[in-house]
Image (cartoon, rainbow, N blue to C red; front, side):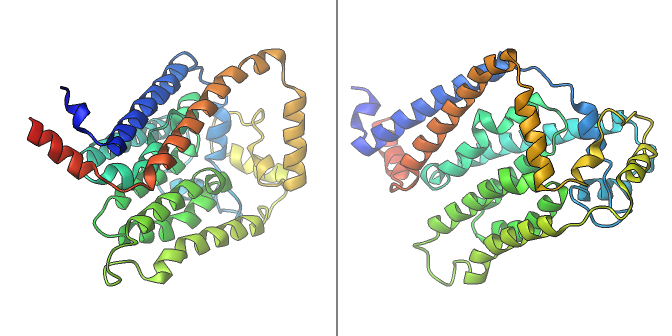
Length: 321
């Protein structure tokens, strides 16, 4: 009789979900392997890297402000390429650290399964592979750090990290709040749920439980209130061009700093109008990503809130051996 025959029904269901998740990940990664076509927007992402606070606070400018104090212009595009490559390597190194850490934590599978699935889903790495240099990498790094801190003995490091990181993420790019901050807060919620049965003296105080959510809301308000640079758009373009020998005329990166919600909507409508049949033909690739994401979320939630019997299962298997 095989060891699996001694497992209780709950353990068998967990094993079945893990098998389905492996199949989902395999589908996602195979989809990536057959559709790794880097897009030719590298210069555009480099151009946004040039934004800074030299002409007043503005959206998406924190990253460029930091590097303005680390490097002296003119900035070659190769510098940005090296920084983008380092960021991508850091993402995968942290991912390997997460897998190693969770594998060594005997009772982590059900408590932190949702957090791990968010990080290990092929959809997480899609933009990094399709578009090297995207600021999405910063959001993925924030998720991975949140997971590692969420596995710490205390919930304090994760809560303090989120309190310190959410506003800077907003100042790097408001899209990080829309795409990645909710996942970080979901991991925080997972940690709070895992601590619900602990003694009050060991748990987080109420202020640290709610502070990340309050700071997230405040960061949205900050993004909405940030003004345009204090010089005309054409002059700001000339300023950016003076920071690099790379030609920025095709990119027009400053348009996002001088745009409002109406302008962004009109731009999105124009992008849809230019869609070609060839672009629609690639919809199957995104459908595959969507399928993997649905499987990950459904299977993850199905196992997240059940009691953790993994320790008992491992003990039973060791007795059998």
